[in-house]
Length: 104
Image 1 (spheres, helix red, strand yellow):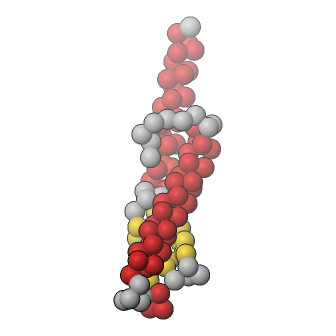
Image 2 (cartoon, one colour; image 1 turned 45 degrees about the vertical axis):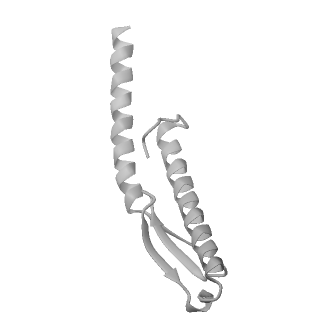
Image 3 (cartoon, one colour; image 1 turned 60 degrees about the vertical axis):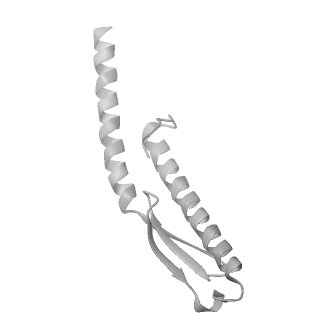
């Protein structure tokens, strides 16, 4: 019994080290998404930090700011979604699909 508990603790520590390394790796990973045929481009990392936002001149119409606002909102939501999916996929490989709250 004692041996099994020790082995379980050792496995948990190894998983913790792998998760920590993966979190650092994911923070450095970047992905880019665009909407509106490339009118809005966003670069985001694995910590859901927006690194870059580009807005094409062609989509700026001072008489129609609402469309630009909607494009930016859609682009940000899409970038965050893709970043979350990247993180979830990578974490599930380390945790074997086990959901651990607060990891990322």
